[in-house]
Structures are given as structure tokens and as C-alpha cells.
Amino acid sequence: MKRLLRAQRPPGGPSTRLLKLCLGSQMDWAVLLDTPPAPAADPRSLWSPGHHSPNFCLIQGGVVAHRVPTQQSTDAVRAALGQGVGLHVWEVSWDPAERGSHAVVGVATQQCPLQTSGYRVLVGGDKESWGWELGSNQLWHGNVPQGLYPGSKEDGGGERPPVAVPGSILMVLDADAGTLGFVVDGCFLGVAMRGLPRGAPLFPAASSVWGRCRIGLRYVNGASREPPSLTSLCRLSVRQALGKDQGKHVDDLRLAPALRRLL
Image (cartoon, rainbow, N blue to C red; front, side, top):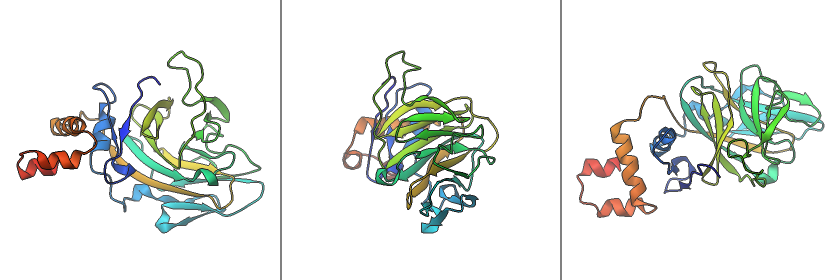
């Protein structure tokens, strides 16, 4: 893949993954994911109690949306808080065994519909939402397929085989640039959608037809598009040089306590 970005999984789980990026336009993503994750109680981790299909209910304090089995209905849920500026990363958890057809994740405006009859793509099914169908890897916007993701538009090669999307992925919204992308199995798959509206809040969203599916949401981190601080860049460079066993290597270094805590 063009510009394939590998991630390590240090102690602390997927919310503290590091994207090992080259210097360049993607460095702010690396710095963002190398900073301490947002607290579990962050309100940006919650699904909205007032913006979901009647066939969804919220459980586990609002971080998991649970669909009630219903025939001939497609149902959607939207996050409680949207983002209109800055760079933001969410973790979406959705067991592949609970997806079926038309399992879509993405972002939406406040005007995106949350329920429709029959089985269809709902997030991405109108002009107010942008979605990635996890089974087929098809991108959707305005009820029009936008191509497979990851696809071949940017590298000029043939289409890649479908990606088997695991139970946990990262969704990356650059609200300032108007782009959306995803991280799967530690690999950033590139920009999925461009031309998203800037300034207006965009909300993580998901739609499903599968009875009893559970979709989890967690806000990982966010930042403005200001240049990263020299401290952040130095910390990232040292942690990448230390490799996977960062904690052990830091203990071996002769550093002042303040520097140990920084690393």
C-alpha cells in the first residue's frame, strides 16, 4: 500500500497505539496518537441518547449501542458530540459476527436520517453522511458508491483484495482538511473520503440491519492543527527509537525523573 503506516501496540491497549510515521504531513497524527489517550469518561466517547433509531438502545453508560432485533429495518446511531475543527481519532468496536450485510461506519451531519425501511446502506445513503461498508469495503456518499477502500485511485494500481475488517478499528477525521480515513490492524489505509464540509460539526455514526449487534465508541484523542511542540516531537522520536519494549528501555536509561515520566 502507498504510504503504509504501521502501528505498535504498547501496554495500555489500542487507545495508546503509536503510528510510526515518516516526517511530513502525517507527523501530526503520530504525535496525536503518542500522547496520553482521552479519559474513559470523555463525553466524546458517548453515543447520543436522542439521536438514534428507536431500534437502538444505549448500554454500558452510553458507550455501546445495542440494536433490538427488527425485521425489514435499517437503523443508525450517531455520537453525542460532533467535531468541526481539528484532527480527531475514535475507536469503533463491532464484532464481525454481529455485522451481517450493510454494516456501515463513518460520519454524518445532524441531518442524517436514522432509520429507513428495508435493508440498505443508511450512513452514506444521503448527502448528509459518509460511510464505509465493512463487509464489501465499499465507500458510500449520497447513496452512490464511491469505490472500494482501500482502492486504487491514488496509487494507479489494480484494485486490492477486500480487507477483512477486525472487531476494532480507528476512525480518523481531519475536520480542517475535510477528510476521513481508517486504521485497520495497525495500518493506516489512506484517505477514504475527501471534500467533507468544513466548520460544521461531523458526528461518528454507524448503521446496521443485524439483530442484537453491539457497536462501541471511544474517543481516543484530538488536537488542533497547530504545529506540534518540540517536546512532543522529541518524545515521539525517542519512543520510536526504543521500539516495542519501550518501558524496559526507559528504565535502563540514566535520566532525570522528569524525563522518565515524559517518555
